[in-house]
Figure 1: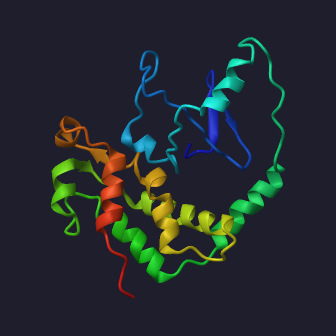
Figure 2 (figure 1 turned 90 degrees about the horizontal axis):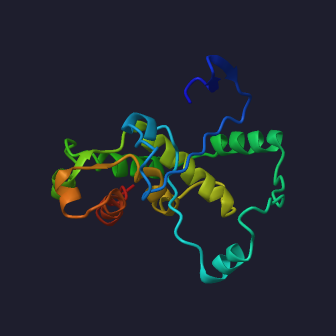
Length: 198
């Protein structure tokens, strides 16, 4: 991912922008799949969990033949426009208040940091690193733009915290033994880490 290239059968193909990696992981079926190391997980900006479809959607799925080909995919945006959107997100200004709050959320997830509370020290093996802070700020910028606002607020950080942080905070054995998952740890951070006063 870092090299923006793909290697197949020993041949490397450099890919033009936008370079995006999308991966799926089935939490039930582990045969033939391997959990990614933390360093690789950290390179994914978001971890989005999809639940089962609604009843109506599942009826629509059921009426489709499992062998039928579906050609309903349509391009929503040209590659060049998508690249312009990402450039726009990068240019969005961010207040010092939002930056400080993003740093407070991520540093408070680190059990050895002085800002970590007893809950974090008890249940977290590894907290979110600096890349998580960068992705949290970037996701907050995009959230603000999608809402029609020119700059993110603390509410955008809160909205994006779970998908940005849950795969970067590694629960320890205490947490696993008590059934506490990383999403619950992120919720704890959102409930306990206060926004900066200024």
